[in-house]
Image: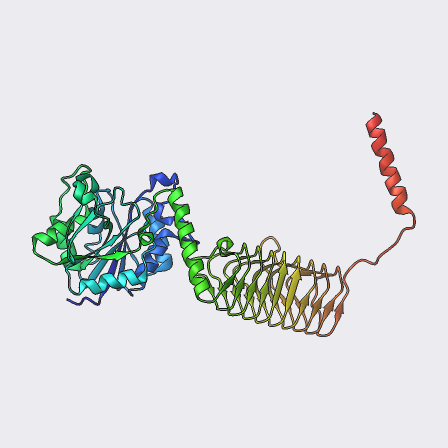
Length: 452
């Protein structure tokens, strides 16, 4: 047996009736990712050879989510909900030829840290079974871990505990690490002679102790064992996750004046000395490099912001936005699937979609890349050191050359050569006195309508 090899079994079969949702419980999101992904990412730190997801309600959707994160994940189905022991047993066939550790996690308990799982694996070197425990502020009705020295003697459910046992503050999380073959041997021995008629995974502790095997418990912080069973729990989990990630960002050297107003995604990457102003929201897939500044009330997703770039306030970066160094994206500007080269500026009231903007180019206020014809998307290409006048409509596909210009209010439908000026607007015609006569006529019509 090799204790260095690891497989994960993630129990994700719960329907989550308290969520009041048709969506499987483990697919509800925290920080932009399903709870299931958080659990899988926690276990991924161990570089598992196999990951087995035990699905039930909405199994197909759960499988799709698992494969999205890990194309090699194996999904098995627990058709009948007969308890956690029965759920874990559904992975038996998928791990029949596996020789190593199995860690059983829960898809609705997604925040267990890498350090905690490492500690469980280390403890497995000297113990047959390792249970994860925690010490909550209020033990309430959690099962208690009865220890004798470093050995775990038994797990006692609250309803079965004596007053002395209920006074114990060390509680059971349900997370277990054991040798694969031993785990399934022990599961085969547990019964369902209890009030719920279910097979409890934690009953393997008694079976292991009956064989005189060493069993111990590892301790983690209470927040790591936070379960999510309702919308209220989901909101609490989001708050806890955001608080932790904000603290980590601050410790890593990110500047935030009002961190409680900044919302991070599960995969947000921000470099040191970057500045994040209040009320910024990060969707999935964002990287912000060292020294960049994200100004207030901006929303970013699926984008890359390079060193020295300034974004916002009130800017939106959508998937595919690539900002090079020292770019400026200003207020009420939206960038989608576009590359903005070094030193370019898009400062006011502008939409840039499916485009490339050359270095040191200036995009005037109110500019729009008209990229969609109702069926297809088309690209706009703007060269280096170009100047796009305010309120320019760029009807894609179109190319604007290096150091070219467009006149204010132009509707550009043809390519503009390097260094050229494009003027594409109707000639102005002033009609003396027309405005006064026109308004007098309208007022007269309004008065007549009122009298009638």
